[in-house]
Image: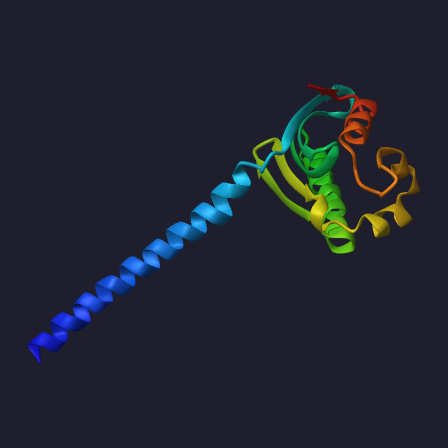
Length: 170
């Protein structure tokens, strides 16, 4: 009986080590590999708008990931600062509605909106590899000027779009 228990303990340890190694492999392959953004170019854009008369300041940072001038992903980080609870709540409600709607209509959207005192922090990732561009274009025809002939969002188009909204890009 004692030998059986020792054998079971050895097998349990081997199983635990195997499970641990599988978990490490999964973390390395599926988490660290995308962090390298496989040969992706990173372009950064920034904008800041001081709308003191309207009671807020908006700062936006865009990370645009592209390869061969085709955008695969955009990460947007926005900070909205205000002393007005009403303004903060309106931004929060409007952004939640917009991003939730875009996610359900077109896919590719992940977002998080959090509040800290008089600041609203917004993090949005748009994954254009999982985005229904055809459906988006049917609702937003003007966006066509930022796409190529294959209806792919181009880096040149993204920079032009953000520059038109007042951003500066690297």
